Length: 253
Ligand code: PEP
Image 1 (cartoon, rainbow, N blue to C red):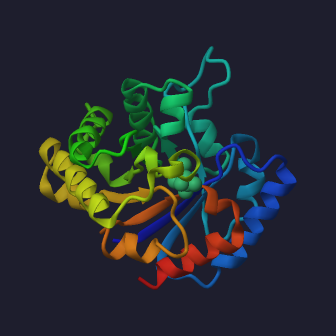
Image 2 (image 1 turned 90 degrees about the vertical axis):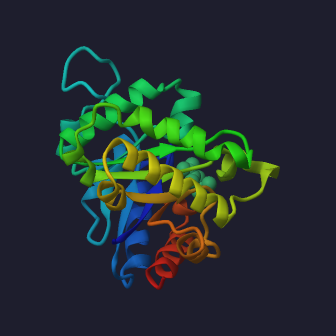
Image 3 (image 1 turned 90 degrees about the horizontal axis):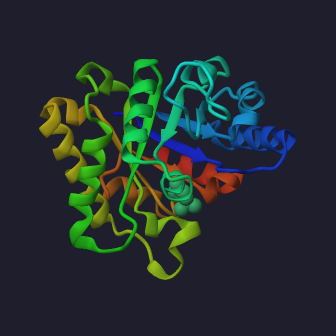
């Protein structure tokens, strides 16, 4: 299975000129990396311009709306994203769930719209508090809810990102880092839920990735001991040099 590294730029940078410059720098940094997919996910207003400078990486969006068109002020559809060159869509990021009140049902509708639109959906799941024992149940419930009613044939375009909220750099503070053992347990829980809903074979085709303070130093361990198929990168993705190191270190694993 090809590994994947996704940079979620969140609400950064502040101008399209800076976004294009960052995309160019990232492209230069990752030019020599081989055998893995790389995705850059800038804010909506910069999608088209960033797309125009990408050669190695693919374009991602940070959200989407499930309806095709109509009176939905401020929302953006799957088709509109596709038209801007987007191939990957991050859905259900904890910041959207917490800050914007996104519910499990909204996440499910978005996943369905993206997969039916033949784009790749990156479903984010993860517990808010650090409490080892409850990870599998909480994460499993989030996955089960997000996949309700989704046809088996659509799962080939699904990536599930395990992102313990407490391990994300901007919210973690004193909580420390997620251990490879915790990542692996979350992975097994996610796989089990997908296998329960569909089957074992489908569960093996879904890429399960990790997000939360990913760095050049920990990426190899995330892959080896954490058994992850990729990484969703926040802060480090805004620093082309660091992001390049993550991708290069990842491509050697
Ligand atoms: C994130 O917010 O999805 C994330 C992984 O951020 P960071 O890498 O900064 O922890």
